[in-house]
Image 1 (cartoon, rainbow, N blue to C red):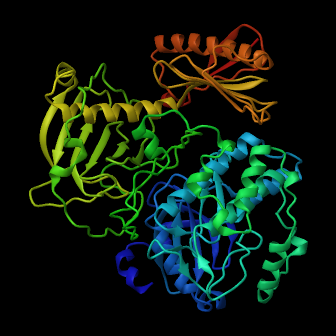
Image 2: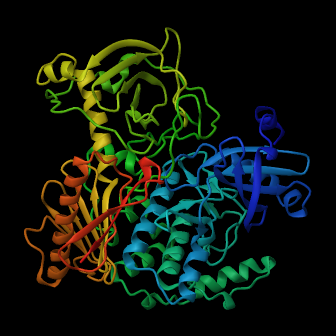
Image 3: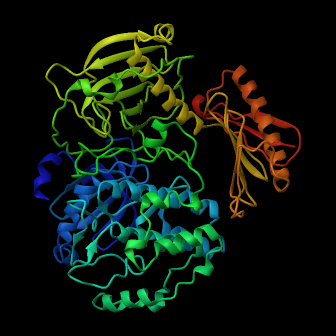
Amino acid sequence: MEDTESSCEQDSIDQYDLGQHKGAGSSGRVFRGLSKLQHGREVAIKQIDKHASKVSANGAMDRLRNEITLHSQLIHPFIVTYEKQFQDSHYHYIVMELCEEDLETFVNRRKMSRSVLSTEHIRILFEQIVQAVRYLHDYKIVHRDLKPKNILLTHNAQTAKICDFGFARQLATNADADSSEICGTPPYMDPQPPSKHRRIHESLDIWSLGAILYFMATSEQIVPASELLRDPKQLSATLEVVRNWNFNFRAVKDKQMKNLIEKMLDKDPSKRPTAEQILKEPFFGSEPEASSLVSSFDSGHGSLNRSNSSFNSSNLSSASNFSSRSGLASGYPSSPGRPFSTINESVVSSKSRTASRADKMPSEPITITKPLNAANLRPQRCRGPDAYYTILESHEILLEVVQQSWSSVIAKTVLISADGQTMLEYLPKAGDVVYASKSVPSSYGIVQQEYSVEELMAHSNRRTLHVQILLYKEATRFVDSVRSKTTKLRIDTDKARVKLMSNEPPNFESLFHDRGIKIIEKSKGDFEIRDPKDVDNRALKSCLSPPPQYHQEWEHHKLCKEYLLENERLLNELSWKFPALVVKASGSGRRLDICRQPEKTPPDERSYAGTLR
């Protein structure tokens, strides 16, 4: 760790107030911390005792170095965000994103209260976990210690994030790697027999995913803890118990989930599906509707060059800060010059700026019909194949266009005002090679040109300014995608939670409490019904009319939709600031009374409370 200490001399544990003890692992303890330099911002701080016997022995220091090296370069909405590391004479410290609790604690707590997870909730969380694993496997990184304890939850258990990369390994080549080291936690670790020819392969993580999904579905391990030997010296015998155990797949009620678990827990590693294949399983239904660009950075997955997957920031793509299914932001960028995480930049070969995909002539003229509007959207930063997309604290849109797909070399930067009226185009200084990083750049380069939206709209359907119009259009698609996942108004009734989203015209989403049915009505007029109990036809898309069994839910959805539209109109007349508004309601009548909250609430946080009667 000495090689990194000099770069972190300004960091000290004195900059934090250590609070609640969150948990302990094999290498250290985790505390809730408050940053004294960032107005009490909450973080998680992992404290590793340098002199503890567990740390000084059995390669623990190597694992710690490995954890920092890998974790510090991972950017994904479903991986816990690494911020920094430093040390003093007694401890190593790793500062990370703070989450609420781990998946094991959450499931066991629900089990104690006899409240099992719904199939839809499991589907949402498990899809996020698999997306993160796919992201790791794209870069030949095998976690090797996936288990419920290493899955952390946030946003009221609606978002899952992978943590603890101490045992993770990056495969040096596309071939499997040999390792005599066996690591993990039975029964979540692959039960292959110990051997000097045991292979490190992505299938190790797939077994873990199968065991995790079984645990989420049944609140039980695939092999009861009472049947597992606790002595680490008897690991071979424990793995043999797992290999020979007759798994009770019948305990999984959902047929599609059960089929998926059986595939992931195949005793033959070569027959297990890849993470990519798992996401295409019927259990997840079809992919969310999105543009090709937005969907690529929603999942953190794009067209990568597998022939050269060395792990560094030059070819490691970041991912979207919102979930393609839940729409929850996982992190927000600071203003330019204030990075929210650190990264060791790696030098990559410079290529001609003329190779930028943004400079290619589109096959058809692109039309701009109206200015984009990013007002009131939360700051966030994510990665697409051709650019880094950022919503700044000022609500301006920043596009850092790369030279080639999934490259980190910036060819040009575009800054668009929050109201979409102006666009500034920047180029790097002559002779400079600029690399993108996890933080917002402190400087955008030299201003090349300023454009007004009227000028760009006037050149629509022409071949002039095609690059600028293309960039503006891509920024608009990004903003529209974020708006379609951002709640503007909400009604909570005794039957459902109904949301009006921020896009124009708006999407509507209704989630019903009793049966877990979800209705998603798109701005284009089509709608989707998701029923977690309907195994054979879970997703009904583009329905002209709902099936009879969903008549009551559909009528309630339409009633709440009318209330939301009416109150949106009334609040627009008051110039109310969205989306800090939440409309609460109960009952199922026809009138919505609205009352203003006390004026002592800050103007940007005021809300209305209403009651359906």
